[in-house]
Length: 188
Image (tube, rainbow, N blue to C red; front, side, top):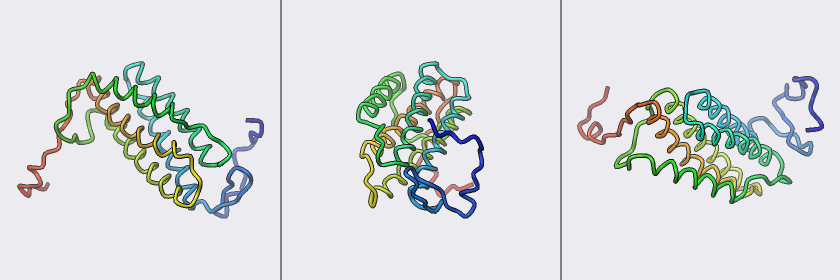
């Protein structure tokens, strides 16, 4: 990164605009910036997950995902860059399958919870889905690397399984969703 600013503030965004790679100025609420911001937020929440106790291999995988997300954001900022690829998606699938084998099969949806780490990971999963929706929205009018959408879709699946791994690691039981509450009209 040869053009690192020496000052943190530039004042160039004070009027509600920011710069994309190549110098293009856009409003801070434009869809591209929304997607980049959602990916940044996802990366931040994954950092919160990493702050918890977890198996070392899961920690290592999440840190790798943070690097991928940083690159993904850079790619959304500049159509000239291409970092995300099918091999990254395949890697997520392999990790997901390996973790899923160690978990009991699901016969129902689970409610977000399962301890601090798992709950934070559920938040990361939800933010990942939002980031995916943002990327889908901009892909309708911008040329976006299709592997980005696939990566985010697979990442949300990975994060769901990671939630389950974290709950198990913490000795927490998963709370299964019950349609009986809805059927009985029981609301609290």
